[in-house]
Structure formats: C-alpha cells, structure tokens
Length: 317
Image (tube, rainbow, N blue to C red):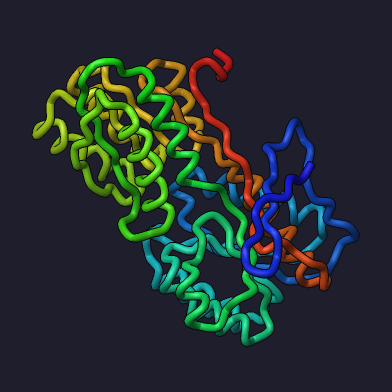
C-alpha cells in the first residue's frame, strides 16, 4: 500500500509503509537489459551490506546488469567521485547512489546526467541547494525521515528518565544532512523533558572506534551522564564497549540502523532502542526506480520509507 504525502517540487512524495513478510510495494515488470551501477559507502558498515542485499533482490527480479561499488573509507567523497567518473566512462544506463557528501558529489552526478545516465539518490539526500546550483532538478530520492525517527528513539529514552539527568548526543559525520537531522531530532526529544540537561559530546564520524574514544573523554568530563543517543548503531556499540569496560551498566544508550549487533545489545540489556530504517528496502527501491526511469515510467520525486523503533519489547529472545 502506498500513502501519498506532501508534494515535493512538481512531483508527489510517497510514503511507503514497512513491508510485511515478503511483500514488495512496487512491481518491477518484465526483465530489461539495462546496465546499472549502485554506488554505496563502505561495507565495513553492515547497514550498507543490507542495502546491497536489497539491490541484488531488485536485480534478480528485473534481470538487469548491475555492479555495486563502495568507497573505502566510507567518508571518502573523493573516492566516490572517482567511482562515479568510472561509471560514466563505462557508459552505464543508471547510477543509484548513497553519497558520502551531499554537495561534493553533485557536480560529477551532473556530468553523469549530461551523459544521459539516470540518477537515483538513496539514503543520504543530495543537498537541494547544490542540485539547484548545478541545474540537476529531476533526481528522485528514496530514504527516511531521519529527524523524526531520531526524535522518536530519543523520546523513548527520555520518557524513562524522571529525575534531573545529564544526557548527550553522539553525532555522525559533521555537516552531512543525515547527521544534522538526527542530531536535531534527538535534541528536540531531550529538550522536551525538563529533567534533562544536554551536554556537548561531538562527532564520531559514524565509527565505533571513534565513538569509544569520544565516550572515554565525555564520561571523564561528565561522569554523571545517564543517557547517550548515538546517530547510528556503530557509534552506539562503541559507547557501549566503553561503558562495559568501566562497568557502568546504568546509562541508557540509543542508536539508529537496527544492526544485528545492536539488536543483540538490546536483548542483553546494554542498549535501550534503535531505529530500523529498512536498508534492504531502500536499496531495492533505488534499483527499481532506476529501472522505471529507464523504461520511461514516472517515479515520485520522493519515496519515503517508514521507520520502526526496535526495543526489547519487540525483539524475540
């Protein structure tokens, strides 16, 4: 079932509820011999492994020729730019991309567009100002409302706190839209609880090891922190590792991505909540949308995948 939401530019935005079982919201139709490149961030983050799995499912259903490319490290915009340039030279028909940087990738994607390549943006949304500045108006986006999802997860934590408590937010890669949106959502949830005092934490660049080191510094400066919301699960896992080492089990930790390791931490009582943003579904819909564009079919400018909170109450033992 598709739910039409508020429009974006000249085409509607469509909200896609979380699929039940093996249901898929879009039928791919007959196989096509198109060549599609999927450009993701590093597979060191299991989130993108899931995204690739969804893309492969779409490949199986449509019969396209598809390659998946990743940047290493996952913060290297320069490498992603080189990957896109290589796909232009390879004369692919479409590129589905989760950009490392929402501004720096736009010029090379414009070059791809000018070469006749269809572009589909998934996960991290390309910056609207950069798209407008380069005359790239028709790129469809598939992703989630990161701000609202982070708000809901942080609110889940905030509602468990009934006395004055210091809390912190561990940010993702500074300056990226996703990092800003998740910080904004978590901050809003924490500020709604008058018992909470938000102390500055900083960025851990989506990485577990950097979050571990950040937690070490953070708790040294603020030993009474009672809750930490992390903008992804890898960073939450880094914070949890530090807390386990110092034997501090009382801190409520939240994350984003619903990685299997995070679910295990929730089952074990080390983590309070995470957000399932259906990475596989984003990858699947990105490739399906690319195929639709190549067939000359209309694609909504925004396809918003609904998120789900994951906590101990909703997990099987």
